[in-house]
Amino acid sequence: IMHRIDVGVVIDLEPARTEDPALSIAGAVQSQKLAVRAISRLQSLPSGDIKLLCDTVVECVRELTGYDRVMVYKFHEDEHGEVVAESKRLDLEPYIGLHYPATDIPQASRFLFKQNRVRMIVDCNTSPVQIVQDETLTQPLCLVGSTLRAPHGCHAQYMANMGSIASLTLAVVINGSDWTRLWGLVVGHHTSARCVPFPLRYACEFLMQAFGLQLNMELQLACQMSEKHILKTQTLLCDMLLRDSPTGIVMQSPSIMDLVKCDGAALYYNGKYYALGVSPTRTQIKDIVNWLVAKHGDSTGLSTDSLVDAGYPGAVSLGDAVCGMAVACISSKDYLFWFRSHTGKEIKWGGAKHHPEDKDDGSRMHPRSSFKAFLEVVKRRSLTWETAEMDAIHSLQLILRDSFRDCSEVVVRVPEEVGGMDELSSVAREM
Image (cartoon, rainbow, N blue to C red; front, top):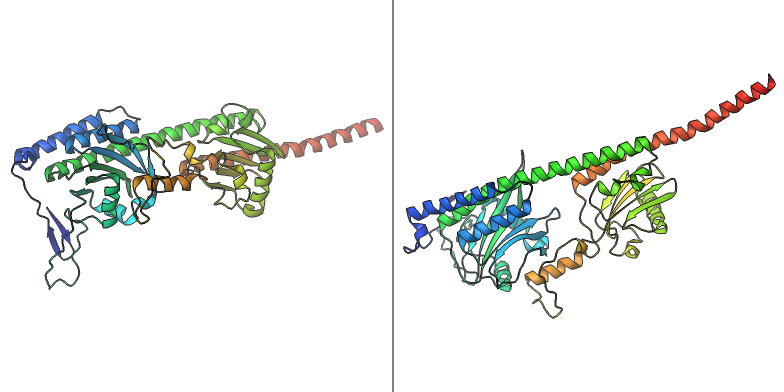
């Protein structure tokens, strides 16, 4: 297995077991046929169901490789990971739904996955072997792209803590017009040493390319559906504004709560408070408004997944019910609010078991410790506000500003018209 580096070509020599059918020409062809069959299975799935797509790909990879457990590991916007699909041996503890902090897979490792998209560890307990290097080479040999590169000691310990001896990691990469993003990983774990022959690994890489393309199409479709929903909701809200007072967007259906995913929403208009769902009290919202005026007076809005981190002094009193907030400033005295509760309410923790007696060794994090650490982080934190959601809020904000301005002009014109009528009455009396 060859790859180029700056000083030449690195050749990895793997043991070729003659009894392994995958290493024959016929076996290599069969591996590709299996991958093509798996790709056809993915392409035959109904559109609009990313969960089904992920569930199917873990089954396909497990059938191809024979690992005890295969998972789809998705990276969220804040870079933490979540197991969104899993196929496993029945006696193994489920990891589906578990979240892990971003530190479990460092940025350097993520960068390498974009370059070298298949990574196999045959036995994490194998002692690493020193490289015998030619004296004419002035720099240590770069083994970043080598299939035989030994795992980092920390990662080997991490695997051991999971009860995993062997692993296969496949990068899931999606592409835009001018960008490439590591969406996640498909990871296989085995409870004993396991070597997947190169033809099968190559077939898995081929499958991942197809999965990435299919996933990208599904993500684009989901984005389009979300945009359509937002546009439809905005249109209905605008229609309400034309027919009724601004409070209609809170009092009627659909309401501002239907615009983006949230647990509560509110309108603070002319000193009055109109609340929906899980929202602060009237006293609390007045305090939030005073804080916004004092600390963010020059801003047209604010979004945060943690009011504690945003510096709001009363965040603790709101508890877990209101952790995240998005605000649109309509005028100097009028505001629209969306609220989110803590993330723990939203996350499906799967079959996780939390026992205080499960101690870490202090220097390594195993999956259960990683999970507990993340649980502490999200206790006062909501889901992050996505860019598309903030765009929808900003669009509604611009529409509302015009609507509120028109209402103010009507209020100003009415006294002027009343004054004019009084003048006419006086003239009529004098006549």
